Image (tube, rainbow, N blue to C red; front, side):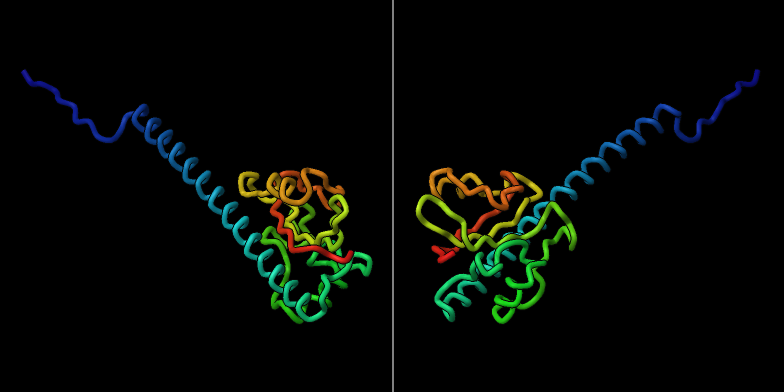
Length: 171
């Protein structure tokens, strides 16, 4: 009598499916982590950019004793407002573009030279919308500026924005 023995080589279909499923799950987790890291990096760059613009505005005030005025056309998107750019260019180098890219209607930096709160007028900078709401400080901005009353101008970013109150403005 001869016994027939079969040698098994390779994987069964079930083993292959389990491996493919595990690889799919792991790659999904890695992709989510990379996306979050990229969003966080863009938010951090926005905050750093706004702080650079703030420093440039402070240099402007040191020389001119007033913030660029909204009444003279200096308010709005910092990348496309030619009046703002011409006033601030001597104090800052590089572009004032959001890391999401030029022409993006959702993400951009805004200067408001006449942000009215009660009987005071402030110069304010903000990134119109942050990628991740938890990186915003919009609620603190409401509280610190004037107890929750805003003039509504340029506020399309909702809670997903980062704001810097630069100082009292002459309008």
